[in-house]
Amino acid sequence: MLHEHSLRVLPDSSKTSRAAAQLFLGEAVWCLGDDGRATAHYREALAYFREIGWSAGCALVLRAWGNLALLKGDLALARQHLLESLGLCHTAGLTQCVVTCLDSLAALAATEGQATRAVTLWTAAEAIRRSIVVPPHLRQRDFQARVDAARAQLDRQAQTAAEAAGQAMSLDQAVAAGLDVAPT
Image (cartoon, rainbow, N blue to C red):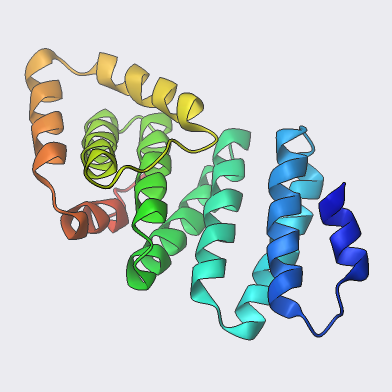
């Protein structure tokens, strides 16, 4: 792979480039089904980004690693990484990353049986996505299926209320709702 080649030729002093290559390689091997190698690359990328103090890079790695953890069923690690990513994305002004973190947190809430929270966060993310034209992320269908299952658990009144709450949220309100971790 080109990303592996880039790691061999990049100088050790180019930590930003090495971190980015590790992140992209993690994404590539995850798409190929190698969760273990993806995790190793995410861990390395996160260490580089933290060393150089680039919080936006950390946010992107944590989001990717949190998504992997979510789909593998490691909900505690998913929550930890996704919440940290959401906070970093918001602070760095990375609105697209905020939206995809909200998608992931909605899927996490659905997985944990928090149907109302799942629908509210998903609807808030969708409203923000439409306002700034954020393309769907790699695991959009996986996460939407979880939220759709959560939506089906709600009666019509609860579903309508959760969707209305999500639609009414500003970006800051959606981030606050995403960071408000309900007990599991």
